[in-house]
Length: 372
Image 1 (cartoon, rainbow, N blue to C red):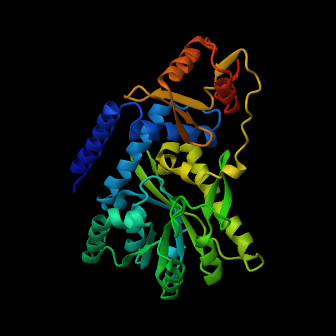
Image 2: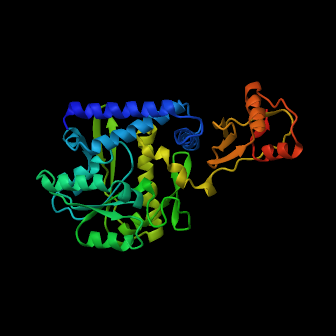
Image 3: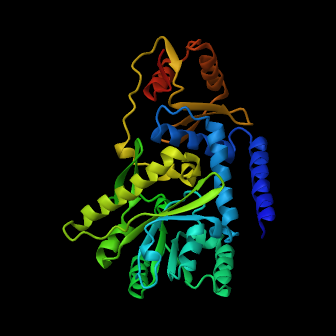
């Protein structure tokens, strides 16, 4: 695909996104995902002044842009490769390349192969199942081209023996490439247990798997952080200095410190180019709610207003109302009558109706209504 056709593909993707958003109706998947993206921004960028609709659109566009770049490896020829290229040199030995769904992150596959790095990409079951054809095309393209001497294979992160397979891969002198923010592994993205690490990200905290850093520690394999991002129309791939296992640290200390370092580096990019991170569309799946600040219920039952800082309210096409709690990402249905009461409260700035005491107490307990 030449540059002209590539631009057409990107423009068509943008048109499709705009058409999809224009056709979106209240309560559909696009609408709800936009609300959750807004809640994520409130959690991690409190007090932000983003245009939330524009931010959501730009995030969707950047996601499609990354997909287009994956089918156009020639773009790598115009990309700028920055930082420590030690592990891209012949004979550097296996490494664990760790990255995020930032910018045109799929170009990292081509960078490694072009540099002669034999590696296995570790992805979750959904990616293996839904994108098998795409990965096969990439594999065949690399295999046919002398420009890509490094070999490429896939490991399923959700297989029970994934840890053993990753260790065997490293011992066979192959490197690993993993997306830390996919939070993929045995149990899927929604897993929550004591084996996860609580990690600071901007103003919030998330739960992250420690398998990557644990395998680094156990096999004494360095982690090479790689970040992909765009500066204008230019793609940049930045390799940071490798992180080596520290024998003076325990396994738990190394896992915590290393994972935090990787997310701290991501945070630097989020402060300057936030919409290039695809994670805004799903980071709610691994928010650390145990570390989230508690939201006090309202003690007042007079002079009440709707809590716009925490809740969104909308009406489905069937006219039933829905409240969305941005604190814990929960949705709950309300009657058409209560929707009218709450919507009128928003417009008037305070509660205009007498409502049943038990319902009023419940709305105050949930902090849907707060002191005006």
